[in-house]
Image (cartoon, rainbow, N blue to C red; front, side, top):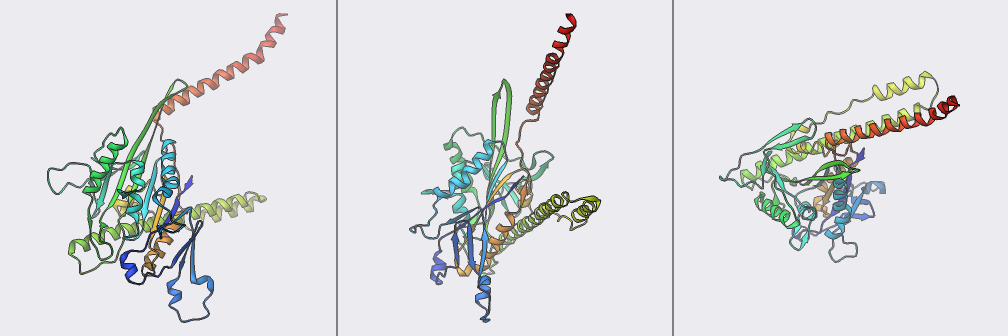
Length: 406
């Protein structure tokens, strides 16, 4: 089992935020993020506890990218060793991996995941092919369509390998340049638009998927392990603005629907994981006690307590596709991007809370080994074990037969 690892990155102030005064309410110290509680600041009550004036969160990684010229600035190159290398290392071991960016519109998700021509993000550093979710429908960004409106793809679920996109095109790449060409093609086909918050807002969730297979010979036996790498650039949530056209409002409604569902899934998974941990702690303590009373008490506490929450994966295409990445067969990293401005307090606080919940989620990753290869290896190990047992019996019986012969 492995907990979801969470990173937080603070972006620079935008031009709009600088025009509005640019008051900074976020700070970082090692792995801790502190945000000034604006709701408390607005209160007239002078007897507010000092601890209530700051909201504190602890994460696995924290990146201060507010001031590019400052001594604490975390560049794209500094983010890669922590997150990018972790993704590749897990994939090489045969695990499914997911890295996804979460945060409000304009908070730096796409910059962190994709980057710019002068400053590459995590995705081009890892390599990719991809598809997107637009208005709760899946589009293949790498398929050449003969008509302007591509046919939406269907999401299915395999009993062993989990959710997948039926009919998604696959492209074999043999070097980094081929992967970059596919990536650039996918980016060009992705839907973006200006909103009242961000001039180049992503209006869809993009999922960059890599199927990674390793075949080799170990001790004369074939060995094959595979892993799936999902690099997810989520669209950002934002409030609806009636001044924009109806299409933008529809897009925003579908984006918010999927992100709200994602938040519900994260909260439910975190609650279930905490309940499981509590039951384990209770069982370990009571098992050390004496008598049947302790055992019955443990059973009543663990079995008669709160029921596990239902996880509404299928309420959204996004959460259905991320089912394995959240609470399933995957090692998962979430990078939450936030704005440091006081004008984004509500969105920033909400992002940090969800990121804190995500850190409590427990996944169950396993090495994806070919079933036939695993069976051959296990049979070979069983044969070796039986041979060693026979050899042991021969060594024990040999002196006995020698004694009888004399």
